[in-house]
Image 1 (cartoon, rainbow, N blue to C red):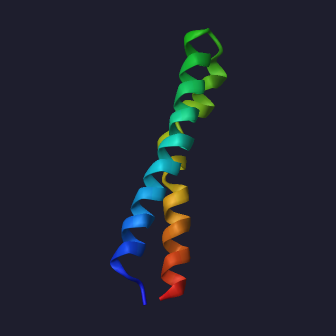
Image 2: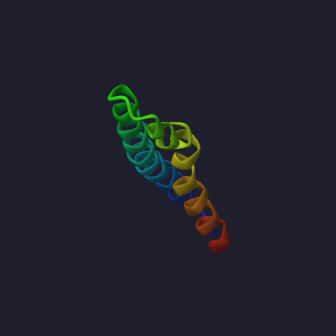
Amino acid sequence: MVTRSDIIWLGVSAGVMGSLIGGMMLGIGLDLIVNGQPWGWLLLLPGAPVSAIPGWLLARKLARQA
């Protein structure tokens, strides 16, 4: 049975991991773009969708426990 605390910790861990992964991709990509290297867009553009993947994977793991 999934408890309320499991859902809360899922949200906290997904938020922390997502912001770390997405923030690093956005920061590195933006730095590359500002310094004149256009392939930085390959990191900048998928930064937000990629940051949702850890939360999605953790939610799937929690759903399997139910």
